[in-house]
Length: 397
Image 1 (cartoon, rainbow, N blue to C red):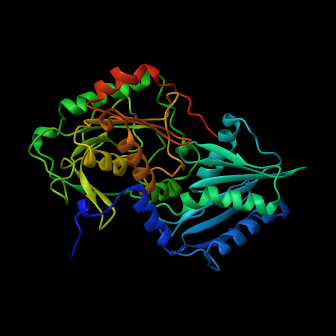
Image 2: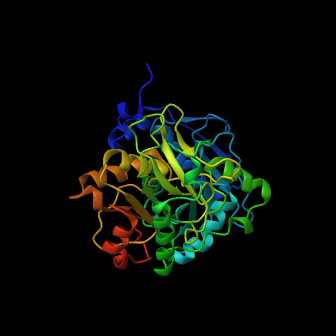
Image 3: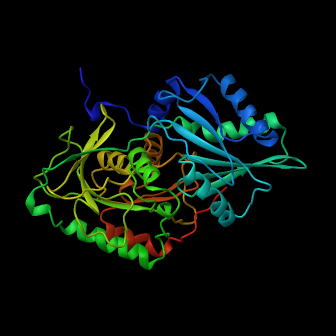
């Protein structure tokens, strides 16, 4: 029997239980070696084996996690054979910076050049190894110094293991069945354009990271294939479709909503199929978002957070719009783990917080080391309610 999406438990607890039950494997890919790198990588290797991970002799298509040791002065990519492989770029630096801006300036190019999901930088100090992390979402945090190598390896593993076990939902199924009367959008897409311009006016659209200046065409194609992104822009907006002529797919009772595309200028959301897409649903059998698009349009993939918005709309009929922004509001309750964007784990964790809010239809929840997800009856409602309270800096650990 094939289960409908409504029959599948997609709470954070259930999603995490399924991920925990899955067998995990890892492999080393040492493009660079040295005493400091070996202390960290060997410690992680032992810790992962003790935690039940199987070590593959070399990375393969079925390997879940790759410890990709790179030269910080000449980082080389790891080209996956399958998108679910989680790649951790590990680089030794003479000294790891503690300032967030400096960490991003050093670590983010390493992450991009290595085609990694996470960058780990390590340096030796008189009181032990210092490790700093940089995520694809521009999160930064760290552990050490002041720990033994064994203690540090345990803490590093605790930070990377939930991320490495995450399940990406980035596949898109484009169906050219969008009715002609929606090819130019509707009132909701007009609100999305206003919302993007409001974000720009509030300085809440960070400059996209210029990956095209760092990667060649081959690696850009690799990034697009793996993550469904043609560029790194930040934040997204969506609005529930209010017409009666489009139903959910494959669950006819599921939500249908407009959402911004991946890697586009959020201040210029004008073109349906390229800047804005109509999400018809989530197909759990294929772990794929189903989209309706106009014919003869060069489509872009929907934002990687589409699965998160689908979960929220599915559970809360009164939610008419969702805003995700890399900003913050003081006092916001956040997720416990900084899961990567586009994963079932992040989506379920955010959906759990929305469910727990006093009014889920007008909730403000935090994504740890990342930003905010805000629900409302409409995008105009969201900006009227909390727009002025959002600051562009996200607190990091």
